Amino acid sequence: MALGKDYATQDCSIAGALEVVGERWTLLLVRDAFYGVRRYNDFLVHLGIPRAVLATRLQTLTAHGILEKRRYQQSPPREEYVLTEAGLALWPVVRSLGLWGRQHVTLSQRRIMRHAVCGTDQELGPYGECPACGIVVPVGDVVMLPGPGLDPNPDNPVSRALLAPRRLLEPLITEPATAGDRV
Amino acid sequence: MALGKDYATQDCSIAGALEVVGERWTLLLVRDAFYGVRRYNDFLVHLGIPRAVLATRLQTLTAHGILEKRRYQQSPPREEYVLTEAGLALWPVVRSLGLWGRQHVTLSQRRIMRHAVCGTDQELGPYGECPACGIVVPVGDVVMLPGPGLDPNPDNPVSRALLAPRRLLEPLITEPATAGDRV
DNA sequence: ACGGGTTGGTTCGTTCATCGAACCAAGGAA
DNA sequence: TTCCTTGGTTCGATGAACGAACCAACCCGT
Image (cartoon, rainbow over all chains, first blue to last red; front, side, top):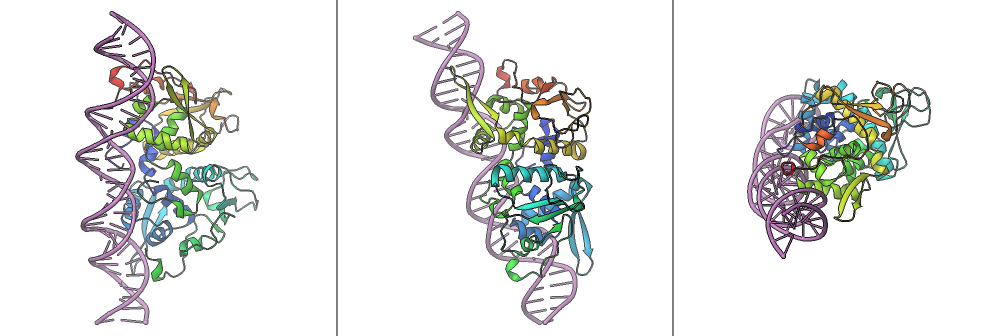
């Protein structure tokens, strides 16, 4: 990991996990992948991350088998990054972190997660369980809705596309980019 | 957060959480606090963290209300750091991260977590639930046992003290330190 | 009273990741 | 032929992490 010293001596699976997903920006990339973001430029616009850092993070996440890079169009060649099974298994981490942040840091509800299948209006618990059904909801069956704390007028097309209710993992379709969206 | 740019623009509770616990070493400090580590020198010995970094992390965790610093002895004055309620609420994050790390990174079981009260030999799920009782176990009712992947001969007294089965949060009592333990 | 040990730090020079702006290249589209 | 889009790489400046040394308050044994 960063800065010459790794967590290898920790003899602990938490340290091992942080070796892989503990670097700056990494978990936000994973979060965006759950939201349906797949393309280099969409990550760039949505996160405001430096280009070089984005490139290396996508590389290491791919190398660790959390994202898979694939060409979704031959001409012109275009790449996308999607969550693998190991990446999908990070959902409880992302969900519990978000809920903790809302309850102890931001104190405002930005996004609401619900079980799409049963139609309840209760939101998921800290590990992604539906309080109505009592089951742990598969990630693809989660709907994400804007919460009251979410900025209704974001300045970038990715955030705008994420305002509408949508299933997690559903590929994000952005408006045609304009020059102003390049960072 | 670190490096001049914060996550403030992210408009997301996950980003807010990472502002607070996303820096290098921070979640390992929190993990150790769950294990019962409370003292500056024990964190230092167990983590092998630079002293200056440890001091600033303890400060920011205290400032954010995740740890509480208190004097447990007047003469000579001695301090300890214990988890607050907000800190305890991080348990699902720590637990799910550890389980993910074991299943997708380290691939070996270092520590086993069980429900102490019901006496089951099944271990807790990703958010700290007991598969036997079906309830989410209060952190103080979790026993931690060494797993097969754990180094049986660690080189520092804190790791040695953590070899024995113990309740989470139970204050760690280390052997009297020797000069060699100073880093 | 003095030296040595324990605890909980601070200081400081070196190393290295992040930042941000500029540049680049392959391939359409006008 | 020139511009635009996508997905990057390069590079200098900034600032955090590292690690070794130093420091201060307090205790104990002699």
